[in-house]
Image 1 (cartoon, rainbow, N blue to C red):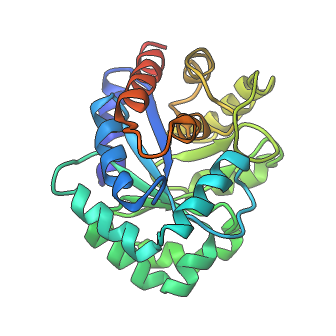
Image 2 (image 1 turned 30 degrees about the vertical axis):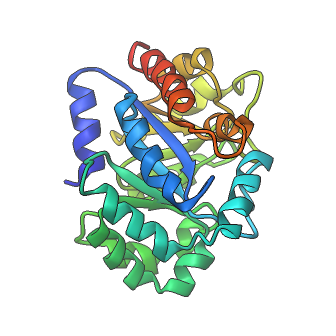
Length: 266
């Protein structure tokens, strides 16, 4: 059982829901990643997702795309982000998941990535552009290790495909609430409750919802049906709106604490 499983077990015992915060690794600078993870944990975040910046993203909206461009310009790499997590592990036990496109991991070496990520304290990975059917090299590398490969389900996934996703996914199932890219939306997708209930009918594994959730009221609604809520673009947007060089911990911390309160109290 890794840190992700322990966290969901702990939350289930308390009948609580998970607040999962996404940040882009290396944004607004490399040093910021470690500060942000510690700030989010202190503010009540249950699990942190660190995005590995990539030059050709297919699932990210304009806010996260911008943050990835800045991170890459500042020299962010997969190797440097692993080192950041190693440093974070000196002070934090919060579960950490990487969200990366397949190319950086393929170039790094799949088995080497799983081994190095596990050693540095990363608990799992989400890869939006790696289909379930082509993920054997990754799931085999992670087999027997405390490292979760988390798969995504979408509103367009068929029941048969959802069964396969539920069987293969470890840690939790990431439900993408809408067809499209990440980013803030005024309203939650209308079919979110029905679709999450359909997945939960197939599995006992936690189902967490992301994409399009951006404020406390939306998070509270989503947490009433899901086991966790993932919020990223709204956090990045706060950092982006601050003057260059201004400390972000206060603004991000207050925003995250409000979301944590809404999700934990749902």
